Length: 261
Image (cartoon, rainbow, N blue to C red; front, side, top):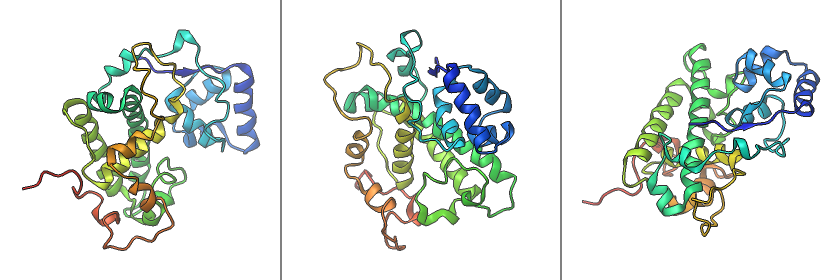
């Protein structure tokens, strides 16, 4: 599947180098923050195109908002045809049929990015003492995205369990006739995947896409869940007790859309 790229003209590559120097980062340090190799970072500063799925990491490394330089979008020759995403291994015909092309595309592409971030954090956690959590890592792609109340619970075992849950979700997206979230972790993974994919929201739409579907890029997620509880509980100022179904003790327990006996 072709990977969308963001052009990197001299004006942008110079800003990347200047910002790195302003932050007193070596190339190796900046590359580690961005989750890429040092050779890849050197190519950024040399003016080579930036993969769209790596752009968020670049922004995080330089403490730029993700929308920084967002005007540097692809031209017609590099835009991705709709059919390419429909061949994606995490493509959900169910999501496309119910919520439209953008919904299916955002989960497929966003889950790629999220899975990459999970693997990078797992790699660093594996080199740390047992019990180390994401907040103790020098750079974590997940730390700022996960609900803060349970920060010290995000250790290697948790992140590995999270990776397995995401891989199962991606399989179900491709191979099941229905795609629903049955647990808090599945709601969370779908939500985070769509958030990761928001950088691609400016993709040019193919004529094959249903133009009548005007659903915003991520609102469909709450229709899928049938509520916005994930935001009003996990991402609010509420303190969740162990009796609350959104407490981390219940994240991996199937709770939603279960068949009744």
